[in-house]
Structures are given as C-alpha cells and as structure tokens.
Amino acid sequence: MRPIGVKSLIMESNYHTLKRTDNQLLVITHLSQLLTYVTGFGGLLAPLIIWATQKEQVDGMDAHGKSIVNFQLSMLIYSIISIPLIFVVGLGILTLILVAILAFVMPIINAIKASNGELPSYPLSLNFIS
Image 1 (cartoon, rainbow, N blue to C red):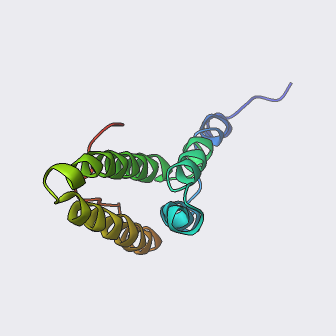
Image 2 (cartoon, helix red, strand yellow):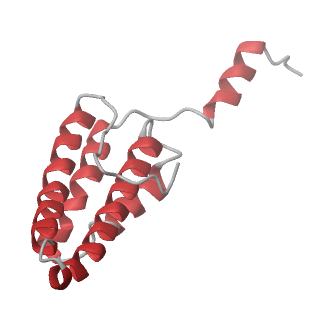
C-alpha cells in the first residue's frame, strides 16, 4: 500500500472547491438582461438561469448574479409603481422612460466592468438577495 502525502490530500480536497475565472460568461450574463428589449421578456429569466447554474463553478458569478437579479427585480417594481402614476400624477411616463434608460445602460456599463474584472454596481437597486 502506498502512503498518501499531505500535498496530494490538500490538492484532492481543493479540487471540488476551485472555481474557474470566466469574465466572458460574466459579460454575457450582464448583457443577457438586454433580452427584454429584443424579445420582450427574458431580461430576468436568462441571467437568473445562468447565475443559478454557474454560481458554484465560476469565480465572482455569485456576486454578479445577485446584483443582476436585484437590479432586474428593482426595475420591475419601479415599472409597476410607475404605471398607476401615469393616471394619478402624470409623472409615470417620465418614470417609465427613466427606468427604461437605466435598465438599458447599466447592463452595458457593468458588462464592461465585468470584462475588466471589477464588481458590478447598479444604482437604485433594492437588496432582495444578499
């Protein structure tokens, strides 16, 4: 019987905890939010699926995925709140336009940050998932 060395035990125990660095997948995850503008839906669903399936394998995916899901849920809530404001105050249209611009620009900015290895920052994002 061959004795097992300490180094091989450490390598074997770290084998399942190592995550790969994949900035391209992080960029795709951020840009997948723009599916809403192309198909009318998918801006929340696509990044949610990517995050749920890859958060254990890709370094940084958990933080990026949580930020994206929080941002998308926040934009959904702001949009829902804006609809009645159209009839009550009239500011709802302006609010919907600002939400649409923010929901279009911020994924692109954070995709660029992800490609540079930086953490995302989404303004006005409510913290649903921490």
